[in-house]
Amino acid sequence: MTVALCPGTFDPVHNGHLDIIVRAARLFSTVIVGVAASSPKEPLFALEERIEMLREATQGMGNVVVEGYDGLTVAFARAKGAAVIVKGVRTASDLDYEARMAEMNRHLAPEVDTLFFLTAPHLGFLSSTLIKEVARLGGNVEGLVPPGVARRLQERFK
Image (cartoon, rainbow, N blue to C red; front, side, top):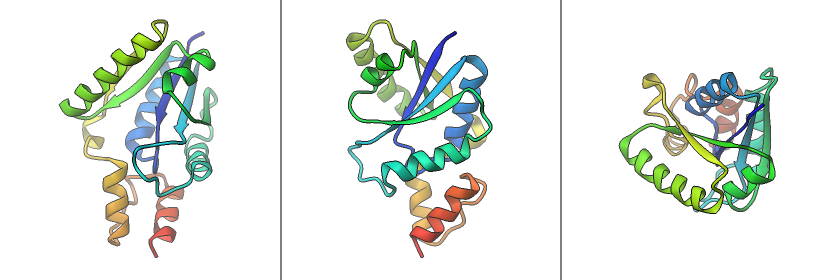
């Protein structure tokens, strides 16, 4: 039984994130979706809201658990008994950044591996930043995010 951690800010969760979570859930006995409390970016949604949206979006996935955390991702992985950190990669620049992060994590916790999933081609353009900008400017984000997230974005930017 292998526990995997899918970490991120998820501000907000979008269908690209969910694709990675679903694919990880097919491979691992337990997938913990770790919602990072702190971020260099100013989150639009509070930690509890982001956790709520992810729990709603992953409802029915029996082996997926959503939890918030603060501090180093690798420390959270170690505390939860995760052997693998799962990350989605859209572009070469994502891979460059994530590879450096994976090497630092390997230095800090050699027993925790990092596994990269290439984002599905039809979802590769998605980013939480882009989705927030479209929603802020009155654009339609339906089909890019779960329905509950689309509703919350619309309410936030009324």
